[in-house]
Each structure stands twice: as C-alpha cells, then as structure tokens.
Length: 94
View 1 (cartoon, rainbow, N blue to C red):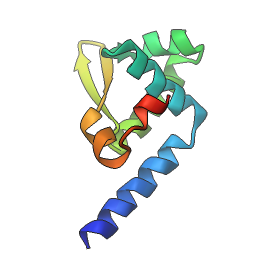
View 2 (tube, rainbow, N blue to C red):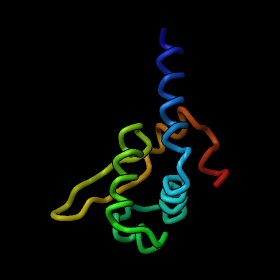
View 3 (spheres, one colour):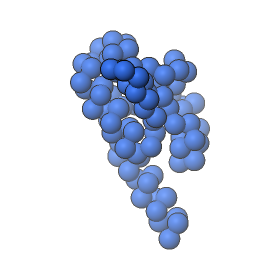
C-alpha cells in the first residue's frame, strides 16, 4: 500500500514537472540557492508575476517547494527533502 501511495505521489510530481516554466523556476531556484520572490523569478525568466505565482502554487501543491510569506511578498524555496526522496539526482541534472 505504501509503495502505491508513493507511486501516486511520483506521478503527481512528474505531471507538475511536465511544464517548461515550472522546470525553469526550479532551475532558477536551484542555481540561486536561496529564497526568491515571484517578481525576482518573473524578471529572470521574463514571465509575468501572476504566471509565476500560478506555477508556485502548482509546485507547492506537490511538495517541491516551500513558500514563506512576509508582508506582501511570498518567498519560494526548494523542498530538498522531497527532491531527494522522490527524484534523487534530479536537481543536479538541471
């Protein structure tokens, strides 16, 4: 039963990663090696803040990122624990 649940989680993660923008966001966070805001990522990738925010939500929903709110800003960082558990070595392949 546990393996089945983990496979469902992996399938969810792979579905989420099948979007080029989300892969770019993950790569940007990985290279920066720090928390970043929607605005910062949007500027670097030349995509709108609202589009980045939408993708943040999708990445957070499958557990690939952490979001920390401070005043009006949301800071996103990678959830290394889940990457190591479900996608070992993936980040290094970026």
